[in-house]
Length: 400
Image (cartoon, rainbow, N blue to C red; front, side, top):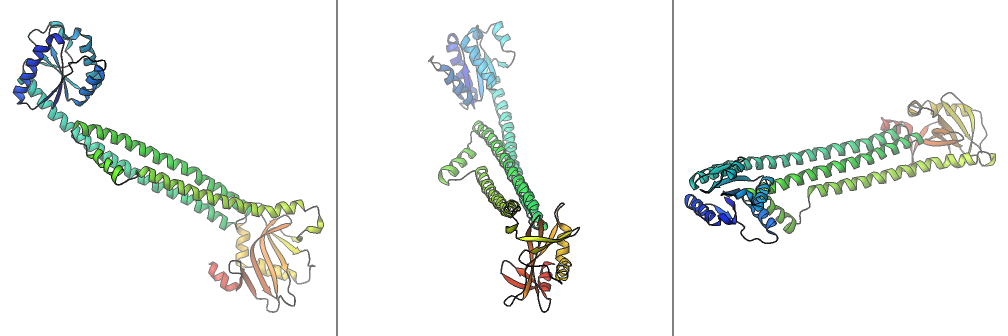
């Protein structure tokens, strides 16, 4: 154990006797620190030695606490939360003894050393328990941080998934796309809360490791400090909090990409409406004209074709398809389904091309493309990805 001895210059010779007495009873098992030189920076030197010591010993003489230096050392020992003890000299005055009411005062080295040994062992055992508690708490912080990462990853992924399901359910219409953009923005916002929590857990662990390092120094061991030096200087280890922050940053960038694609798709949907609206006053550039408006379905007819007898049966065939009925049922409030004959059969083309989509005034936003063979009335579905016609029943089975 280490003792820092404080005494007045007038009691210097007597303090040497105290130190020798302590060496004798402890069999040189203690280390003594003192500051006898009065340099300009003596206060910083004394404070450093006090921090390294386990106990602060005041040698109490006739007028010990009348010295400003002794008063400062006493105040500094209390501020450092050090264990203070006193050794009473035969010359100690009553005023000096009264000043020592806040700590133990001994008359001989044997009493003093017994107290020091018991207090040192008890204090070391207490610090060891505190050390175990702090190390365990850092592990719990790490566990909680992993739970937070899993939670926020699930939340943001779920928000993006809900947006995609919303768009698919309502046929990626304008309203559905706007909803997807809002949900993507929400996921982007959540990622900042995620990053803030990870940063908070990192700072919390930093504080805990500083406390652990302080306790280790008091226990005369530096395991965590040595481990950290090996990890950072030799292994080039990167803290978990930095790695997690990078992962969140990459995830946020992917959210931004998704959001940009959704905005571009929304612009793609709105451009025909804007062009259609601006050209609406010019009847010569209209792509389609309305034929019939029902309560739930708008019928369009390509402007280059006249309305022919038998068209109603074509519209009815398409309107009664299971997928078309389901689309009409899922239409968002305020939207109306539309069916349009986009192309009629000729010598080179043997199908009626029927488009099904959303009515945007004089513009149809297509969702399904069906083809009805002129001779057999067989219905086909256009796979726009593979650009091939699929018999309707085969496509319908895949959609189940």
